[in-house]
Image (cartoon, helix red, strand yellow):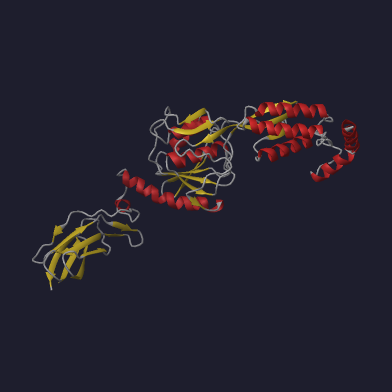
Length: 429
């Protein structure tokens, strides 16, 4: 009896075929008359479902998840839930939604292959811009050839900071990631680990030390991201943030890094599915569905401006560290640490000792200012007047000391020269 009821219900559903197609067409804003293929039969729907389930056995999903998905899809087919989806496009969209609902992710998609789909082609040149402060800005495409990457690093060999713009970048190849990273490290470094559903490592991606040019591992690196940064570009940004301490500026990334495969399951119907999960080796982060949190969160449209300001400061520090800085940069206010010299005794009869740090160049006044400290090594309280200066000028101060532990710190007025300061005159009052 149950079988008879089922068949009757099935015939009732099938009788609504034309009506259902019209409703679907209206919902999808397409003409119900136009179809991309001949009518898609129930037998063909079954073939797509079974072939898809077979491919998903080799995906990142567990056997239990695939088994549960199989029960849902087969039940949908038996209960005529795909009646009215005899157009391949409609059926593919419906099947994708059903899979996403059961797996809790839209990582698996069913699509119609079209002749306009062109494979990714290698990029033969990378766009390099220069900004103020010898900062190179590169619109990075990780589909670039090794030759394009070589030329890019040749073009920026005189730059002292680097900005990679990965906003809107959703593609790339692992080979480009490997080769580009070879310029950013001195040795082979793990960048990403791919694991299957059993948490077994199936692939480890490392930087390629065999590059044509000279590596620049100390070059300050900034990376721009937004919500559409995904795929290999997203994996690269994470590896640089964790392994090289690159500074990421912009928006949280898409969280779409898992390695995917695309296979034909019937005629021109294709299924795209994740076959391995990406793990960052150092932090063991898996950012699929999460994305990268920038070091400096800022809306995409402002990220380049913010990163450029930071990169200019880093470029100065980079030149200072390499002993290539101008005197103004060498003693720039960008230098963070104050390192005082040895304590010296003042000339004359007053009991004062002092020490002076390297000067700081003030870009506003174009003068050098010196951090300094002075202390009294006599007994009890004292009032001392002294003159501090170099060949380009002098400054006078009168200081009250409480005892020997009372150290007075300050920063001098601006001097035209960066020659060391000394106490030239001293008097106890």
